[in-house]
Each structure stands twice: as C-alpha cells, then as structure tokens.
Length: 299
Image (cartoon, rainbow, N blue to C red):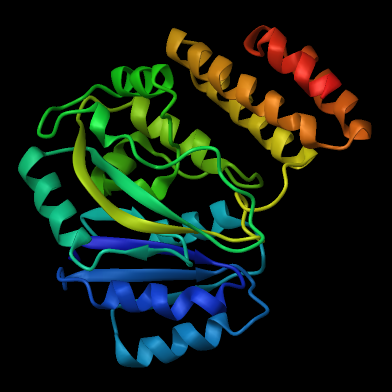
C-alpha cells in the first residue's frame, strides 16, 4: 500500500504541469502514488502526463470529459489506495521533503488530518488576493484540536483558509465520514474542508510552509468575481445548513456571506437583483452585514 496518494485534477495547465509532476517525483518519501485526472484538457496536458508516466510508474492517468474540478478529484479519490490523501493543484509546487514530514508527523500524532502554510506566486494579469495562506502561527504543534474550535478560531482571527492543498488527510478518516467533493460548483473547497474539519477531534498543526500556490489570470482565484461565484457560495451555505444547523455553521455563514457580498459589488448591476433575491428567499440576509449589503448595491 502506498503511504500517500496525491490527487491532481488537470485542465489545460500544460504550461506548468511537468514542473508540478517533477516536484512530486523527487519527493524524499518514495512510496507514493500520483493520480492525475485529466478533466477534458484541449492542450498538451495529456501528452505531458503520458511522457512522465514512462519515466515514473507511480503516476496513474485518468481521463474524463470536462465535468469540473470536483468530479475530477472524486474520480481519482475512488481509485486512491494510499494511507493518506494529498490534493494538489496542477500548477502548484511543493517542497521535496514535504510528504515525508507530513507522513511522519501524522503517524506520530494519529491525526485525522494536519494543516500547514503556503506561499503565493501571482502571475502577471491575475487578480491580487487580499489574503494569504499563513495561519499556523495561531496554533501549537503536537496538540489535538477539535474541528469546531479550530474553525471558530480562524474565523475570529480572519485567517480562515478553505483550500485543500494545505491539508494532509488520513484516507480512513475520509472513508469513515463518507466525504466527497460537491460536483457542479466552484469554491467546492469551502464545503469540503468545513465538513472535513467539523467532524474531527484530532486536527494537528504543522508549522511549515510547504506549498507555492500559483494564482493565474485564468484560475478560479485569478479571475474577476462574477454572479457564478456568488451563486456557488450560496450553494455552499445551502449544503452546510442541510448538513447541520449548529452555531458554528451560522458563524461560518455570517463570515463567508458578508465577505462574498462585499466583494460582489464587482459583478454587473444587471446580475445583482437575481443573487440578492436568492439570498433573501433563502433567509440569508441575516448573515450579511448591513455594510456589505450597502456596498453590494451602491459601490
């Protein structure tokens, strides 16, 4: 059994993919498998993966017609056999000793999952991000955290980061809670990591910065905010409230939707009535601060 399954969804990232795969092939932890799901790429991504496969038999390749990142991750996850799961973006880089350190730390602590920090590399033309991926300074190492405690703390400190590529997850824990990615939306990490976190009493912090995350002009985070972004965030809240109507879910909804509707002042005015009406009909205006509602309509 591999110690770690690395899952990489790919869609037209041939410009970066070889470098990403190389940093995985060079990992000091050798007993790994690299599962690549090609989500209908039209560039040279498939050729790059097949060429790399000839050099490293640990790479496994799956192809599907374009269905989105969630479906691509879920497909690879169903084929994963490693003790742990690491979800990686196809244009990111990770320190060559990262997986060994994560594996040994998770084994020692018996963690359901661990989290660490990342750096940002912004491509020219990409939107500048108003946040970073540094939060381990808020926590202690080798101390188990309850998921609800952890989520509440990062919200209070305005350091919530939902991305899955900052997590190293025990596969048996994922199977026990029966968690997959919600298909058909973007910002799916918001839903996945919140459910992942709230069901654990053994989350551990590793005070390391392992990942370099590229923000491209064509990536989800690098493009301009649109109505589709808002609709997908609303779907995330729909699903979380369907999962559980606990105080921490309400707190998360207030934090998230206040930020989302503040940022949504950027969408075309013609799209604003539709998303506002959806929030109103869902009873979500109570989660959106008055300031964010005014900025949404007037800025």
